[in-house]
Image 1 (tube, rainbow, N blue to C red):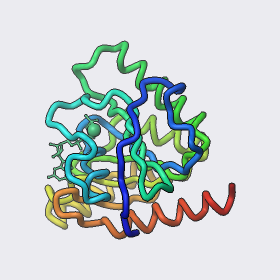
Image 2: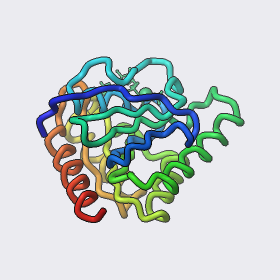
Image 3: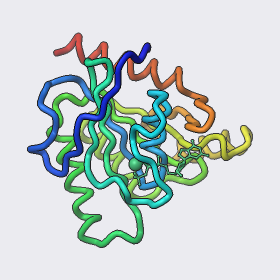
Length: 197
Ligand SMILES: Nc1nc2c(ncn2[C@@H]2O[C@H](COP(=O)(O)OP(=O)(O)OP(=O)(O)O)[C@@H](O)[C@H]2O)c(=O)[nH]1
Ligand SMILES: [Mg+2]
């Protein structure tokens, strides 16, 4: 896809603050530090658009971006960061489930999993929700540049064993490897969404 315009729209802490223009949306969900914001920047080839950081748990609101005046990316807060309080962890679940249930514009959910690690309990929980609520989704195994291709294949088959029902792609925000494949998924979800609504 040719990216002709990208802008940050807003940061929402509550449902009342979600965007209301009715445009289809691609959501990025996953553990804190897994690379959500980096994936967004890399897909859009805009460094520093979505804030990335070495401090996990940084993004606590849903950040909305508008692309080509025709669809949104939604960068959701990360989960599973040990140092956030129990209260915040409960809030994450509430927020994420509320988003999945209520966000009618959701065309595709991209669940990110670190390609170096097995999915965590919360990764499984999120994946269950995606199935339970019948959400069109893919898994993207991130940071593929950190593994040799051999190790990456091994790791992918482990992830596949744990989450057998989901399609798994790989990505490196460092090299951009996997970009075309993910854009193909995004494009076809947007087409489907527009044909069905
Ligand atoms: N080598 C490598 N590093 C990556 C990749 N993607 C992300 N990182 C690094 O991982 C760290 C976390 O990335 P973020 O994109 O901020 O992660 P996030 O999921 O948005 O994190 P939260 O906003 O805290 O939920 C940063 O230091 C990134 O530079 C990748 O594909 N390869
Ligand atoms: Mg982030």
